[in-house]
Every structure is written in structure tokens, then in C-alpha cells.
Length: 91
Image (cartoon, rainbow, N blue to C red; front, side, top):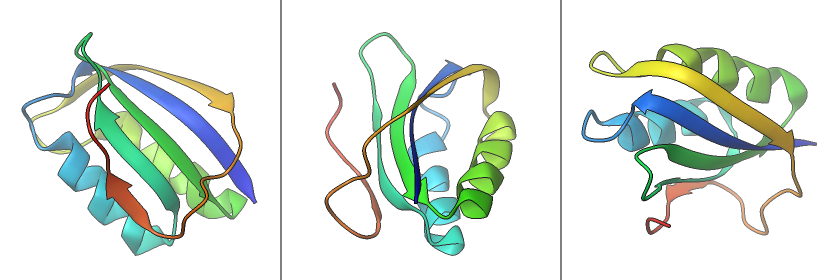
């Protein structure tokens, strides 16, 4: 299993990014969570088979129609302790 923590910067709040990411992750069978951060970025933990995680990362670089992604920081992480993908409270 491949697991990564992402911090996605740009115009990613107020454009449906989290809902969009939940739908894409579920379509790909990726587990984890996504949340807004106080600094205006979006943070996510994504975990699954390598191909699915990499495809989600590719999709996240574009985001939903109204988003403008400038940067995605990624680092290896421990996988979540649950299956499925969901939104969690902002940090």
C-alpha cells in the first residue's frame, strides 16, 4: 500500500475541491481523508495501490473546474486506520 500526505495550494477553497476529491478518490478505491487548512490550502491523506494513488495525484494537479492548483507538496505517510475516503474537520 502506498500512502502520502498532501498539501495542495492555490485557489482550492470555495471551489468544491474537497467534494470533488472525495468523489475521485472513491472512484479509484483510494482511502484517506481531505480537509481545509486555515492557511487556505487543502490537506489530504491518500492511501491505496500505487497506480490509484498516482492517478489521484495526477487528477489533483488539475482539480475541479473552478480550482487553480499552484503546488502540491507530498510526503510519505502512514496509511489511515479506516477504509474509504471522507472529509474531516478543518485544521
